[in-house]
Image (cartoon, rainbow over the protein chains, first blue to last red):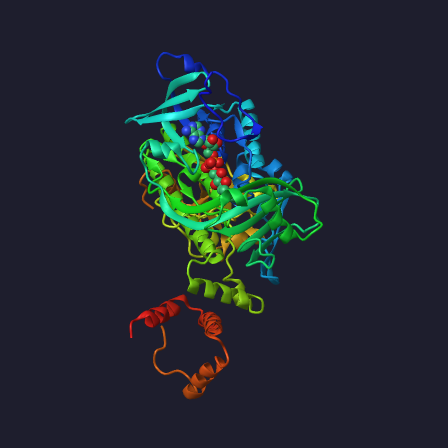
Length: 541
Length: 62
Ligand SMILES: Cc1cc2nc3c(=O)[nH]c(=O)nc-3n(C[C@H](O)[C@H](O)[C@H](O)COP(=O)(O)OP(=O)(O)OC[C@H]3O[C@@H](n4cnc5c(N)ncnc54)[C@H](O)[C@@H]3O)c2cc1C
């Protein structure tokens, strides 16, 4: 019999085997509030966020679990904070490798070392290294836990979306399963179907940007080596295995190795194990015992869709935007899409916010995508200079970096992924000039220790009114939204991160832990107006 | 603001020093030298707006 939903890739973990759904046997297509297409990291995180908010979600994926193979490796502090909110971060932290030290080499010389060492007083490290399949598996574990606690999340394996028909008040889907096709309708459809998004193509939407004319060989190597847990990056390495090279540690005695191969290569030849081993041997030196775990050759693109919202279809993750991996911004930025979208869609579905709130998803995440694309394009241009003069300056920077500290700040092997501050967002309310810039409206809340635990853990799932040495009611209710107060007393970290020179502070914090507005003292009318604005109801501030 | 009025304390000496610094360099080495010099001076100036003006001036056709 013909396989109706063939596997396009092998699985690392089979998590949601195909099971017939009652939807396949109903005469008329059943309607769901939210359907998510794609069970990659972004689809899973979005489902988890919505499900934990009580919104029924159906996830359709054309496989039965997580793909084998090496992609994302570095997960940022903000990703961990979001996953913690979603109940998934602890196992990630336990399995992941923490690192702070980076070394940058040119040819055979160590140019300099850097220490990410983040300021103290944060619940999570700057980065962890974790294989993408494990990251996805831990998200799935959190979904199973949420389901057990009543979260209305369904994942349907080997359900491939084949056609999408947008209508005014819903989107209709044609789905193929191993047992044949069925139809389904969604009030809202979230497309998390990856960089080659079939939904984007079905809707005839563009995906424009830049292709980098370079090939990167990614080899995950298993070895018991006592290289330190550091990120080592070489420009023009003396061992000649590529124009640049990267060595980075993963859990389970795995090491990620990256070689920049150039544009005109013979892919098949380069992927022959003997040729890969020759490059790895040259890098590691002889006598190192290792096994090749996974290898692939990638080319990289930086591009995004013009719009992330098309009526009732919302695009998130790689389907909406794609970056080169320098700076680890792919999955990390997609998780922030999920973080941004979940609460907004939940409010719209509950009838507490107008549909136009979803336009702010597009505005804020397009701004973030542009920031990520800019950063990752600049890193890629530094690593693979496009013209003779660009290479001249690049090498001048590298030559100077060994002795002159200023030049180190110009060396760009990937600026590490930081979350976007939504400056200028229509959702932002008043700012207070005495307070620190890092927590201005639009910013993700900086974490801080409090006597009862980490600040971010103490924020409510919805909006929070955070007060530091300021009086305010214990909670307020306006526009159908409950806002509990979190009352804190000044500590050195809170002064540095929230108060600045103000004697007290009142912060209205969004469900995605971004600051909506802030004041030196509580004023009920001002807070209510800012809340209206933050949920997309034209408030006056 | 970019200074375009004379500002060098010893213009002829400094200019001669610049030219002499290239003595014995191949063309490629001279280019690399210039690139390093530009980066060092850029950092000394620091101000992005001033550098933007300088870059625009340098780009202007003679
Ligand atoms: C070499 C490399 C290194 C990287 N390193 C990093 C890093 O260090 N840090 C980082 O943050 N990011 C990194 N990335 C990027 C990261 O892998 C992606 O950003 C991330 O996988 C995007 O997740 P996603 O959920 O949007 O899409 P995907 O992971 O692509 O998931 C899409 C899902 O949709 C399913 N699907 C597709 N079409 C259909 C359909 N018609 N019907 C049903 N299901 C469908 C697919 O089977 C898949 O499960 C790297 C990428 C590469 C290639």
